Image (cartoon, rainbow, N blue to C red):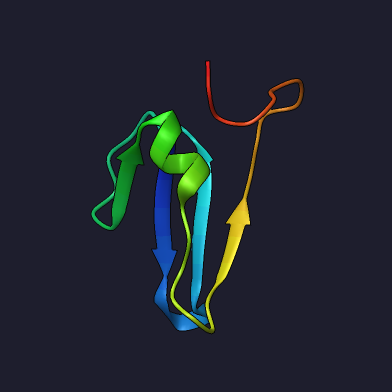
Length: 58
Protein backbone atom coordinates (compact mmCIF):
# COMPACT_ATOMS: atom_id res chain seq x y z
CA UNK A 1 0.00 0.00 0.00
CA UNK A 2 1.06 3.59 -0.56
CA UNK A 3 -0.11 7.12 0.16
CA UNK A 4 -0.71 9.58 -2.69
CA UNK A 5 -0.54 13.33 -2.11
CA UNK A 6 -1.09 16.05 -4.72
CA UNK A 7 0.97 19.25 -4.69
CA UNK A 8 -1.16 21.45 -6.91
CA UNK A 9 1.19 24.46 -6.80
CA UNK A 10 3.99 22.33 -8.30
CA UNK A 11 1.80 20.17 -10.59
CA UNK A 12 3.14 17.10 -8.82
CA UNK A 13 1.74 13.83 -7.51
CA UNK A 14 3.83 12.34 -4.69
CA UNK A 15 3.55 8.62 -3.98
CA UNK A 16 5.26 7.19 -0.92
CA UNK A 17 5.02 4.61 1.84
CA UNK A 18 1.70 4.30 3.63
CA UNK A 19 1.27 7.24 5.98
CA UNK A 20 0.47 6.67 9.64
CA UNK A 21 -1.44 9.98 9.89
CA UNK A 22 -4.44 11.30 7.98
CA UNK A 23 -3.90 14.35 5.80
CA UNK A 24 -6.85 16.13 4.15
CA UNK A 25 -5.46 15.90 0.59
CA UNK A 26 -3.87 12.45 0.69
CA UNK A 27 -5.24 9.12 -0.49
CA UNK A 28 -4.21 5.58 0.42
CA UNK A 29 -3.80 3.26 -2.56
CA UNK A 30 -3.49 -0.49 -2.82
CA UNK A 31 -0.30 -1.88 -4.39
CA UNK A 32 -1.92 -2.42 -7.80
CA UNK A 33 -3.18 1.16 -8.08
CA UNK A 34 0.10 2.57 -6.75
CA UNK A 35 2.02 0.77 -9.52
CA UNK A 36 -0.42 1.92 -12.24
CA UNK A 37 -0.59 5.56 -11.12
CA UNK A 38 -0.27 8.18 -13.82
CA UNK A 39 -0.67 11.95 -13.61
CA UNK A 40 -2.33 14.48 -15.91
CA UNK A 41 -0.33 15.81 -18.84
CA UNK A 42 2.21 18.37 -17.65
CA UNK A 43 2.32 16.91 -14.13
CA UNK A 44 5.23 15.07 -12.57
CA UNK A 45 4.98 11.89 -10.46
CA UNK A 46 7.50 11.56 -7.65
CA UNK A 47 7.77 8.05 -6.21
CA UNK A 48 9.42 7.58 -2.82
CA UNK A 49 10.22 4.12 -1.56
CA UNK A 50 11.76 2.62 1.54
CA UNK A 51 15.27 1.27 1.02
CA UNK A 52 15.16 -2.46 0.47
CA UNK A 53 11.62 -2.36 -0.94
CA UNK A 54 11.00 -3.44 -4.51
CA UNK A 55 7.94 -1.55 -5.75
CA UNK A 56 4.89 -1.09 -3.52
CA UNK A 57 3.65 -4.66 -3.59
CA UNK A 58 4.01 -7.09 -0.73
